[in-house]
Amino acid sequence: MRVVGSSSTAPDGRDARRTPAPPQADRVGTGPAIDPDELPDGLVTADENGRVTCFNAAAERITALRAEDALGRHLEKALPLEDLEGRRWWQLTDPYGGLAIRVRQPERNLLLPGGREVLVSARYVRDEPLGPVRGVVVSLRDTEARHRTERSHAELIATVAHELRSPLTSVKGFTATLLAKWERFTDDQKRLMLETVDADADRVTRLIAELLDISRIDSGRLEVRRQPVDIGAAVGRHIQAYVAAGQQADRFLLRVEQPLPALWADPDKVDQVLSNLLENAVRHGEGTVTIDITPAPSPREGEETATSVTVSDEGPGIPEESMNRVFTRFWRGSKRGGTGLGLYIVKGIVEAHGGTITVGRAPGGGAEFRFTLPVCTPAYLA
Image (tube, rainbow, N blue to C red; front, side, top):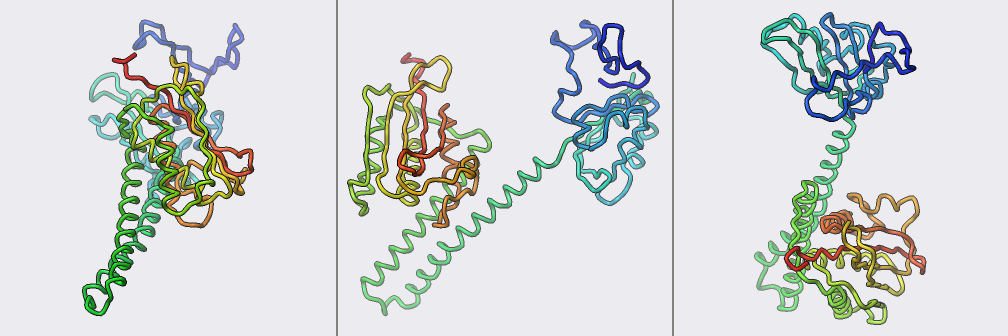
């Protein structure tokens, strides 16, 4: 902790500008004292005269002010904060001369010189209730992370609105036309319209399911109901569905290395991961889609083996500069539709299982996605 009025170097060579840690008996718990510079948030403290006694490294970063320039100055001068209406915050709150019953200032958005926004909260230190303020502790937090979250939410709302508008417009148009002119259409025309409505309804349902998944992933509430999963059979079902839909059977190559460890996972969630990865390979890739299922080292401590699934194609692949953004929200590998949420959800599902997922370049030049799921045998079977 940085203080004013100390010599720069102590007899033992240590930096004397840091306040020595209080005796062990005077601290709560038995752990070592924490250096204020190790705190993730900005910390500014002032004494009973309002003079700054501590200005940690995070406070320097957030305010762009050197600690040497702040230490010893009055808090109002060292940290000239204003509210969003341009009023000086320290004059409004008056921590040293205000109401004696106040013990803190709740967090709020304030402005630094130059208009930079920062989150500020304060605590008033008193030796006894209603006594004079002996010190003020100020916490500073950068608003950049909050703004990123707000922008992400705004983008999500805009994307959802855009994706919902098209199918709902189609559903409304076809149903209104059928209701108004039912007798004028042939049975084949009616069937075509109803099939279109059905497909658009499925599209809306998928989008809603994606939103629910994102909500659960972001809040850490994605539930995994583990059951024995035959991963080879699951991949085979997806390939058969593509062949039934018109894809050539020889476009898919499934290779399974035996013996595979018994896998306990959520079969519905695993199907969702496989569906997304195979759809990406079929839609955006070219040539043969190869699926390799092999045993692998487990990403979980205490387990030796896991199951790894690699999906690769022979298309143009993913640009190197985009590799680190593949699993973020709204990333699209091409302009051929999609919400850009699928791979974000895939990563969330894999990690909820305790697994890992990576992306790279396939031997054939296309994209290669590889996810590894731990065995996760239930305790009662171990």
